[in-house]
Image (tube, rainbow, N blue to C red; front, side, top):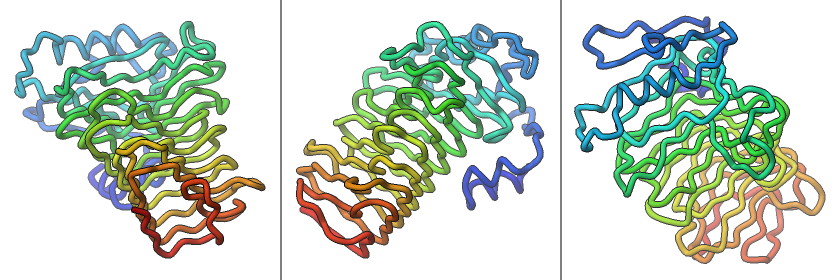
Length: 315
């Protein structure tokens, strides 16, 4: 188990899914609770929404007074958990599975409330007046199923410390509104490491607000509008995108600073640019390659020649 988690951190979430499906054994004093204690049993075909929400509410009570002592782990053992609605919490939660592709949260097909235009999340760590501290989501897959065009895989707010690591967000039929929604106010700082998003109209959308998010090993594929719609100061290292739509759209907002180092942007379509920069704040690009697109970059409405960018700075 230790080997699997070390390899996941070094090589990315996709590698971890090839390891055997097994639970993590925690020390007795690890400060973790299991959803099994609250009746959430994987692979039984029974809706686990209420049981998992009960685990969240009981382990991390809403009226906690912001006490850091409540910073505990809620563990989801290996298997598939069926849900039909949104699971919510506000802070001090490490929501952790046994690994991507090993612990799976699966939204019911054609679930009520997830129709077109709903923009309703499966997991929601929500904004709490700049007190959404230490929200961790790790080691799991969120699958929004089929027939849920208004679904958001994860809507994640985090302040000061927290991370999303070794996670896969997917749509079984490619539909869905957003894979990872970071549009709630005052997001960050935070880390996203080893994340794959497959499907959805938009892979990631960020808020036009403070403060910052760092992404390390990010894979985006099969989006229908844009891979990454950015409005936040972000730093991205090792982005792999396979899309016919733009991999990144950096919006015309003064906080939308983009640092992108080492990117492989595949697919493309005629007349489409891999990166569309509408930003007044500036970008830094290094070691960016694209295939299939008309060009790697359109910057401020001006098409830039070439499929590859060794280094570029825009003030």
